[in-house]
Structures are given as C-alpha cells and as structure tokens.
Image (tube, rainbow, N blue to C red; front, side, top):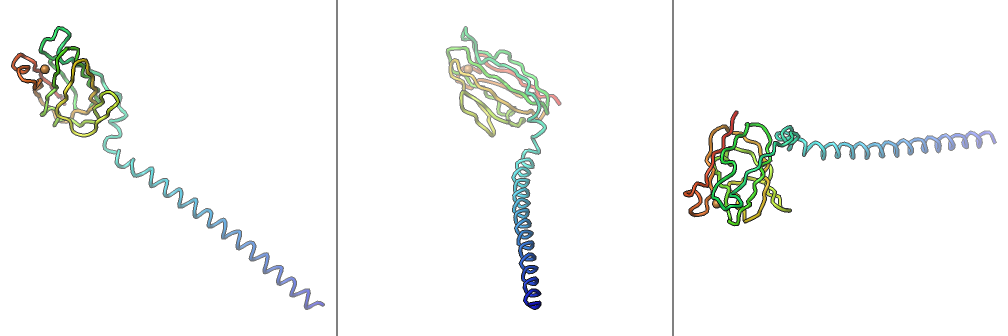
Length: 176
Ligand SMILES: [Cu+2]
C-alpha cells in the first residue's frame, strides 16, 4: 500500500509538472506571436516613415497660397499677376484659375524642373509626379502644391498660338 501511494504521488507530481510546462509553453508561444506581431507592426510603421523622411518635415509645413489668373473676364491675354516670387524650401499651393472664355496654358518648363511637385489637383483628380505644363479650359481651376528647390528666374508663358506674342508671359523667381 505504501509503494502504491508513493507511485501515486510520483504520477501526480509528474502531471503537475507537465501541466505547468504546458501552460508556460502556451504563454511563451502566445508571447512569441505577440512579439512577432509587434515587430511586424513596427516594420510596417517604420518603412513608410523612412520613405517619407526626406519630405516629412516639408509636408508638415502649412502651404502658402498664391492665386494666378490665366487671362481675365475681359479676355485679355495676360497672367495676373505676371510676376511671382517663391522662397526655396517653402511649401506653396499655387491656385490657377481661368476666368476667361479662352483656353490657356501655364507653361514654365525650367521653373517646373527647379521645384519638387507634391501634387496637382484639379476637380476630383490628383496628379503626382513631374508636371511641366498645365492646360486650363474656360472657368477651370487647378491647384499645384510644390516646394521650390533651385533658385533662379524662370520664364512663364501661355503656349496657345499667338498668346505669348500678345503678351501672355510672366516671370517666376525662386529665391534662396
Ligand atoms: Cu493663353
């Protein structure tokens, strides 16, 4: 009877040990999963953060709004204003409007090469990437969000035949 009791105790101890080990394994496994999940989340969060690092601070900057009118309601062939000034490293939102009955272009290729375009928004469409020229139909509007990079004085014109010749030109200065 004593031997039996002893054996019984060994079995109980063994079972208890097994239960504890299993619970620990489960906890460990669960923690491991959580840890992996956290690491994955960290990775997901970190990757776009690195990608946005270059422009991150600039994107937080409130954009300075400037409006340029392409032509006017009297259908005069000119930009209003025809002289624009920007500071390198600042964020701008250039609003382009066309209050005339004619189609116009905002053509400033060298200026466009000297800036970083965040986006161009027109209606419900948002365009990202390099933009060199914008066409605005009568009563159209577009918003150009960018950061000037290269200082200089750049030419602006409307490339509709006859419009540049008629004086639809301007000057854009980027100052450092
Ligand atoms: Cu024009």
